[in-house]
Image (cartoon, rainbow, N blue to C red; front, side, top):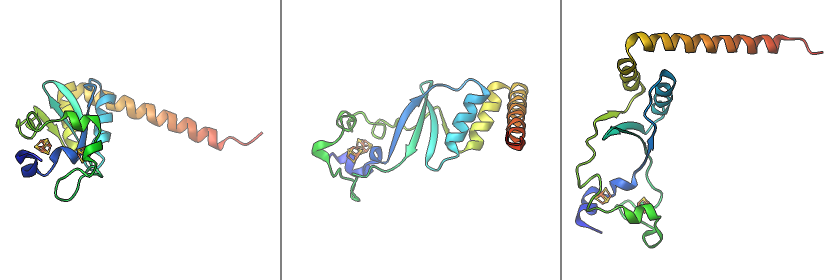
Length: 144
Ligand code: SF4
Ligand code: SF4
């Protein structure tokens, strides 16, 4: 195990991260806000690209930061090197980091503009209420 890996105790094995499409509408921002309602989930922007990170320790990581299946570790782990990892290259400093749904809502409001954001939210809530009313009517209908 490298000196750097020993020092950071396997940070790269305590989460996984994947790219998502950049949200550009109220509904898409709402999806990201929903992701952030879940514990351990964060979103970040790095070089203009959007990512979702899920803090979830790999089941193969030992308490002392070693890999239990080192000889048979997945390809993605083999290709990740401490020589260029996010920890050693100091690349955990993102353009933007969102850790709570409130942060995402504020960002969405600012990005879309308050007026557009509020109007889209109003339309979405009205659509939802109409669908809910229809569903309530259907369930009240007597059986044939
Ligand atoms: S590859 Fe990087 S993040 Fe992973 S354990 Fe080594 S130093 Fe830490
Ligand atoms: S399989 Fe091993 S190297 Fe890969 S994330 Fe898990 S503990 Fe880390």
